[in-house]
Image 1 (cartoon, helix red, strand yellow):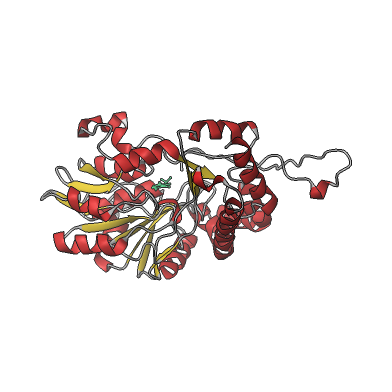
Image 2: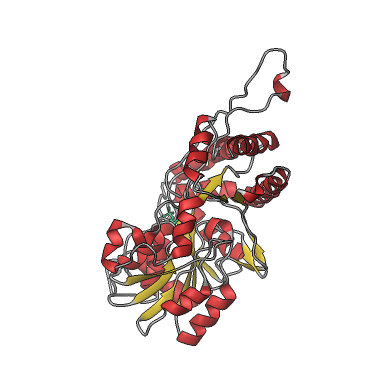
Length: 396
Ligand SMILES: *Cc1c(COP(=O)(O)O)cnc(C)c1O
């Protein structure tokens, strides 16, 4: 998710005559990885030195252990580690045979990697619009975008909430298309009790530090229950080489580092607890905002029927063109916030060749103009959340 914003120090304002514990925090970071990693520092250091002395730095035993653990979590037969979430998407499209001249339907309101995986293969991204309430791809817009050249659909489970997979799967069956889920923000999220990453040919996960399960660097994984597809992914992530120095296909070099897998294995047992903290934080924001009179000026995030989101982001909409000024105010209060995403992909200069003009995806464009993501990370305190809401109320 863009640039990494961290702050390991939360300073607490201490005014004279007031007990420090009762004083509200003045600063609130958007994300504080130290609160998550800090408590595991010793265990992570031990894992690090174990891998160091093993000398098995790429696809070591910890990688296989992590693959098994993620497959089990997602209820899939296989999980294949790779170097990043971006590569997970690229490898999945390669394994699905996407190439020159094919079209792949995806949202424009997402991180860049969703679409660059398509263009890297010489295929054309066809951008579909989203729902205004969930920010997720609109199956009706996907249906309208399908042509005889369409080969695949990439729904993104944005901000930790699953897209409407039933409708998308139905379209895929009807038109014989491959579905690849972008699960970079949605580990442990579910849709009608089905885990994200288990509802298509391939679930693409990222272990970038800001994701719900973040490593200490880049990492990614692909989940699938198709044996042949899994085998192709394993081949493609290692230069298409099998046996050694024999290449039937041209793959890429995208493997998971043993160090990352070992560190992620230390964090994995905590993920369920961290997710439940994110869920509790989201509920707390709902309560705090409902106790203000702000609800005509901001729109809180919507949870769609059948969805259990994992709140990678808590994203509000700010009415009346006041988003940027509100963000400026929060910045002056030392409260972190971020715009995911300010420029939709269909309007990015590098995709100008695909011929989209402003106005072609109105729901996406409106969202880009008024969304604002607030701190939601596990370990965020009630006082900090109250401060965020108070600062927003002050301004609006
Ligand atoms: C983070 C992210 C990616 C890319 O993952 P990396 O591991 O950073 O390459 C892809 N799609 C979405 C929606 C993301 O948020």
